[in-house]
Image (cartoon, rainbow, N blue to C red; front, side, top):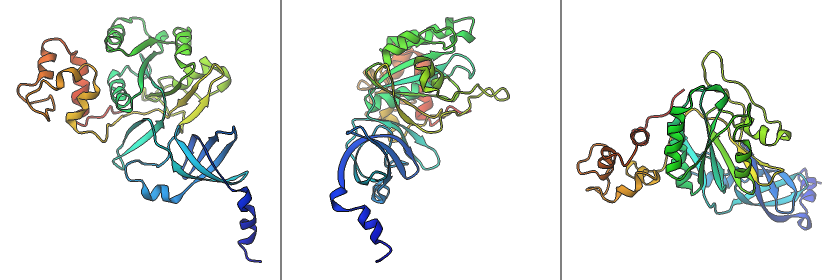
Length: 320
């Protein structure tokens, strides 16, 4: 008897089967997959998936539909990633590749804290670009309303986003503000939560569904910055109906895979003016006879959104 014979018997042909399922978590070279028959299994990733990949940091992402070969109760391998209908990704500076946070979702819930950490609307604009590019609805939750006294400046930004067609709501896990509205948004959809560390993504989910018991921490007293609490993206089923993906907090959100002249297409307020520019490859920064700049000067485009656009095309990150 050779050393390989027991392993061969465990993979007897009559037990081997091909199945499809959805990736609920990715760890290194393994993925947890919820098969369509209701079973969940930790699967190895076929090495060929890594050899063929050159655009993304990892070949498989949470939310991916995959085909796997099952050899036994604890022995399965992901063979193929099925076509995606969109994905949410950001630039990984170390590799210059796209880091896919989640694939095949319906909507992106962008969490922006009004305080602790400080209010940073530009990072929301960056995530909105990624959502528009992925074909997802963008929703903005302004969290921690209980920590501010004057809501005026934040109301202005909320009105700006709402005017662009983005559902924007104020929330507090302390007072309960916005929780019923948020629950209705999540029911029946697959939603990815994205935002800075410490803005309260896990706390929102714990309030919506206390049984999740997701780990949450406060902002660092020393630095005033969010601490990372969620360490890996995970697809979570909600009792109220639907699924959510709680992603690790981010402190910068780079855009990759687009030319500067293409970024404006994914800004809802800039896009209508792009075709009227004199130059086809206009970056809407320094070129003459630029319809986008004229619209900013004429008050048709808000200067704050235009500033967000410029920061993206100049490669400026939202730093710590």
